[in-house]
Length: 318
Image 1 (cartoon, rainbow, N blue to C red):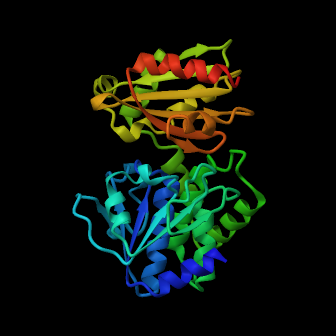
Image 2: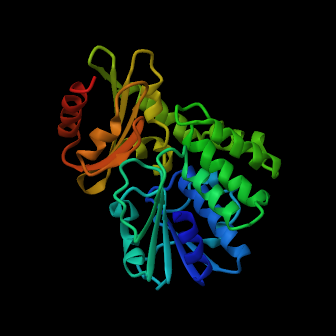
């Protein structure tokens, strides 16, 4: 059993690095923090390396003292664990830590995972990596306290869209019921994560709605976000999270796309679908990945060129 192999590696390690994917979301952050807090209970020395600062809405999560922002000076670790990361590219600059490790472990739930670790635990039936970390902590015989439960709840709640997405299962609800029994403040988390929006983000949402375009008889929605657009409303990169759902929520839309133009000509693409289109297939064509209903990739070309290319590719599957 792969979990037992990972537990054995953890027990034989001292210093352990945890690497969530770049632009870490709630699942990546919550899972990383919960695992690090559990490792502390085993008297290990865990350290989580992020590529960027944590988004402000997750500032309440316990365990932040175990987080470092990577400064391109990799420390040597005997064991490095990548979480919620589909491939090496999603580790960004921190791939140096992974490549320099004694042993590498890859824990993920994306169907497009490339099995890039020496030990790979990939369970595509899990709604979130938070579910996998919950089981791993239980198997290590560690009691899940309120801090770990809070991190795991955020991981699972965010990756299931507040338990609204099709990846939500009976197992999901059984796990979250146990987390609530361990002290999770559901009301506070729901309000903070799902219902609190900064004024710049509200303005960004307004601009996104203004430039939203519909194609293929209203089945495809595309939003373009440039650096100039962000600056015009005083928004941050983290404020782009969830913008893709503006298009997805429109009646009749099957696929929604956000094209985020960054400096240097790089485009970050987010895909969402409702019922039948597997957007991970489209993301895969551009060295990206994800799930059937939520995926992403990075493309280097002009923003309008990318739009026309994506319209053509999505037209084939609609």
